[in-house]
Length: 100
Image (cartoon, rainbow, N blue to C red; front, side, top):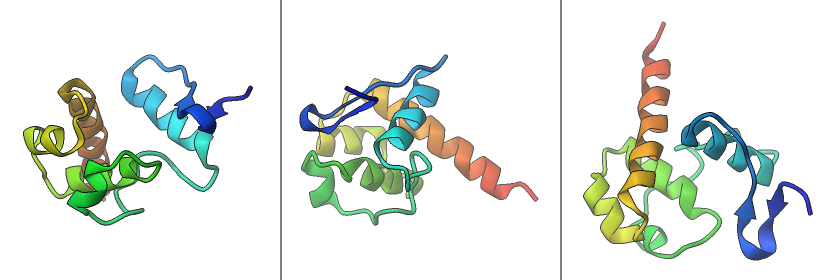
């Protein structure tokens, strides 16, 4: 079956934390993707409302633009637990980008 099961929208990745497994899963689905990248797509609230294979990257862009967890939950209906974990990835990326 493989690590990417697009017909049913599944991926399989193992990590010690959700953030690690999530990043691995994104990289397995598309070899051109480096992970939860906020630079792939622009923020578009209509795209956040529709579950598509690219919504993940719109969500990353929204988190980078400081959308609140409550607003993203309202738009996406994604459980806040996952949104907090995704925000953690973006916060770490911002920190790494700020280092000399």
